[in-house]
Image 1 (cartoon, rainbow, N blue to C red):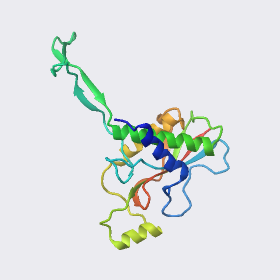
Image 2: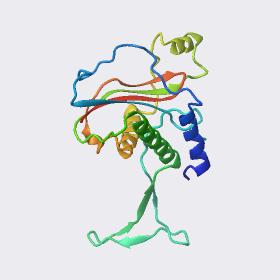
Image 3: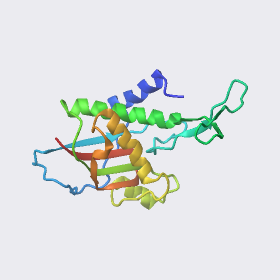
Image 4: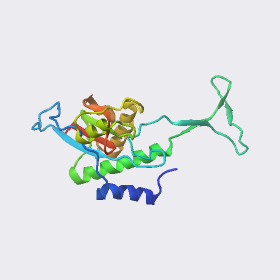
Length: 217
């Protein structure tokens, strides 16, 4: 079941009004980049994004893309519908699939935020149709209550990075984000991504993701 209009409006109001602190960099340092800042062939985009809080994700942590859920199609009596496969001559079943609401809701809210940032900060932007390079993508998870005080203090002050070594997998976190970027019109297809640098998952005070990319214009 998707977000209703009231839930969607409430989340976007938080983003628009900055009622919550957006994800931020933990360590201030000179970023490694592939291209000089003055190179006119490439444009750099910066996105701090929030993930919506919901029953399945109460902290608003980054969400991974998940596989479609599959089920056999049934008739009104609840019996599985079968048909004769013309190639094999055997009985087969009709399989249908769906994506869980928590994933579709999260995807939709990422798309909305990305579109708003493009309209606000990058007026006249056109999707990248050539090579795209991920300068960094920091997936930030809410600090745990069980953390030692020293770790909590370090996270707050930015003394060091406390990496997240457990699920979700980093590549699945990327997939949902790149799909949202494509739908929002950042690039024509995520196959345009030619290089990646500085992609990590860590703990922080405000959950979300920070993305910085360069694309040829």
